[in-house]
Length: 331
Image (cartoon, rainbow, N blue to C red; front, side, top):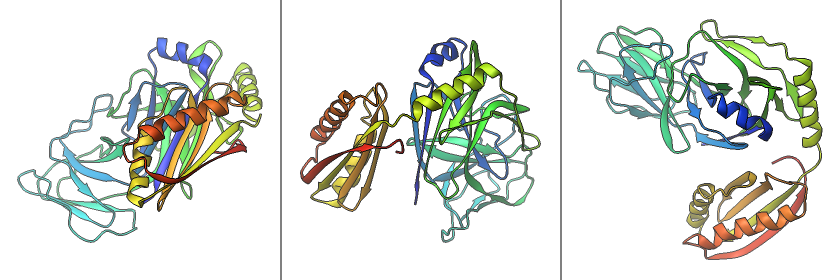
């Protein structure tokens, strides 16, 4: 099972204006060929990291009502690709049956009657809805196909679980096909919080308006001042930062897995990149400072932050620890 990582950076100078205007950072996940529920919508800082695996639940809800929060009417049930869940005549979701596979599809057999069928996905260890059919199904089998694509935008009226209607403006779609890690940067138009543009892979990407009803994107026309601002940010990003790479070998592989989860939950303030992955008994890490990332003082800050987390880990018995300084802007 792949772990997907998404890092959303927000231009620090734009954060006060966005927050004072009541904006939340929103993410939606694509299911059955559309985005129709806010997977995550909440507070943000300069660097925002999200991680998830392909973990899903299915549930039933009596109705889809745009602008309101999804309200489940049944119990949720865990499900994997290839499996089926039966909604029985009493309105109870039965445990999933059948072998799992890599089809990318799971199904719900509705024996209850009119019911909208929804999907939850886990993000940062918590379940939240990613999809709800906009019309109820009477009876029969419903196929559900989550796709590893996400929609990102800032919104003053939506939060986690909000059902989407009409259009989502100033958004960007990020495709994880063939990738497990993606990074984007957002900057607002000067003096216009909530209208802005995106940077992906060192290039400016025009914002789009996503039409929920038709599942279509329309490019928005940026102002000259926004293009100039994005260009300045790209030039700044292209100055190669200093990245600290750390490798620690534990006595047991299980300790390596536990350390990854522990370290990700202990992300300190002042870091832009805080990535940990385990392979057997070895944990590889890549760390980048949020402030002055090209200053050699950042190296000491990152090493100290890493060691503080390592030494506080309860199973900190390890064989070998090495640091390496990388002059690279990839993470």
